[in-house]
Image 1: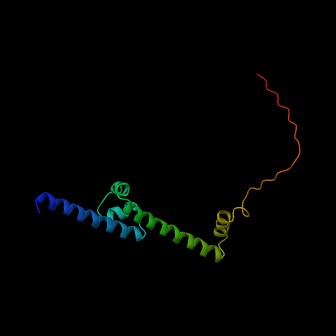
Image 2 (image 1 turned 180 degrees about the horizontal axis):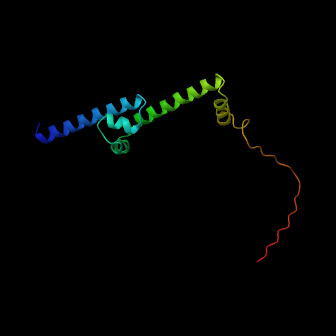
Image 3 (image 1 turned 180 degrees about the vertical axis):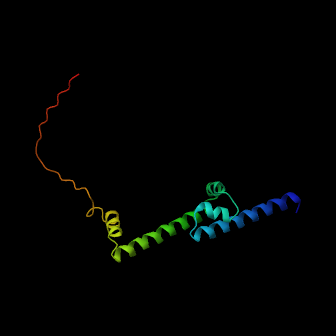
Length: 119
């Protein structure tokens, strides 16, 4: 293997370690910026990698989805324990047809309106 091939392999190996470190840190609950910093990269690099490698992007999206599920579970648990704000939020977003602030009624009939425009 020549020096150029060795350098390329080293770069790929380093990048793979950085990707793994980023995902590991992101799973721990830190921000994207902090996970990138802990992996020794800039968050701009993360966005470039996500565009370039779909597999990496899918891993990032899976971590983000997992976080969303964690918050959903915490919200539900809080609502069940009696947190009224959590109950209202949950119901307004999960049972929109029954829980909303605005009700609309259709009242049949004619309405005559006269509008005058002046200069």
